[in-house]
Length: 459
Image 1 (spheres, helix red, strand yellow):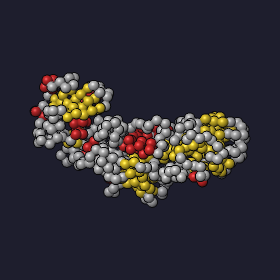
Image 2 (cartoon, rainbow, N blue to C red):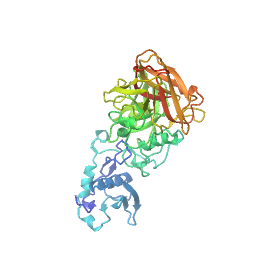
Image 3 (cartoon, rainbow, N blue to C red):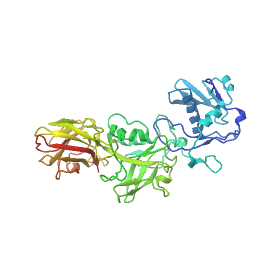
Image 4 (cartoon, helix red, strand yellow):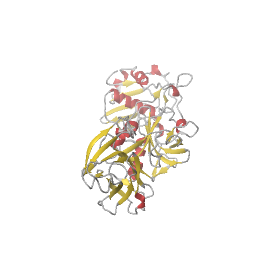
């Protein structure tokens, strides 16, 4: 390929340019989407996503790392894409010219190079290929940033316009990718842990071992799990495509749940999941009209739903928690997410054992100051200590730990169990919580052990 110019030759006028909405979602740009078959110029512009994606592929071929920072319409009608200090010009009306670094003369040098780009952008997914081998893209008339009235936690879900289904963002930065919506919903109520959540959908919110969820302070619940049902506000993660996909559960019914998302379908920001409690708690795409499986998610696999919590499996250990009169002695791990046989073991060395979370947790309490937050915290654990009275303390943002900020629960016997602390029973459970502390025994005995696998919040 010529390193100074790319041009669509008039000899290629029989090529057809059609946009394919390849469903996938990421914070960063994607590479799928164009297969062409449009004839000569008709006076109507090629879909902007076609030109935009091609410009990005040109930039990729040249090794430019900067994302698109600006798009300008030139006096001759071409669109100029700025990749940092580099530029690419494309003619969206005929698709016949692609000048790199604004070198018009050099555009004549390589008439076949545009054909290479079209070939590189070819889609191989059969579900988009018609009987003649040419993809039939879904119609998209939604305007970038438009909405269909869906709100959750005071936030609206927006359309990614003609860029829907790819890794590009119609409004720059990550607006309106699926990850932008998830981050914005949780950030609005101060529930994002640490810095702003970043990353692609599947690898950034789950990952094959659950490590991405752990890094965001999230606990994944795999379909078929027996230890907690999905809640509104939970994040749903799909694997598949280039980047996977994420959304937020905005309603849970007896047999279905509603997911609100972005960048799945340009004119529809919600779809349904089937919900079953027959064999554990299970969410699935479904296939009926209105269900996610029939709304561009048929080739994706629902991997997990997630919410705030901590993974104490042997893979991640104490996850930043500190110990008092306890020592971390061992742990087990299978290396997979949501495996309750993975845990850490702590040995008590004094009468006042406890473990404390890192600060900056930003947990939203369901209390008088909020209608969206958590009422309970649950620990999947076991204890060999004789005293079975456990307690959870919390520290409000800007406050301190106190006996006033505490609730008790009883550990039954010595086997594995879910111990539930009803935080909402205390009127002081309100606002944003900065830290949490678990006292597994009101009076510890040196040598007894406490095993913990997971902790998660519930409503």
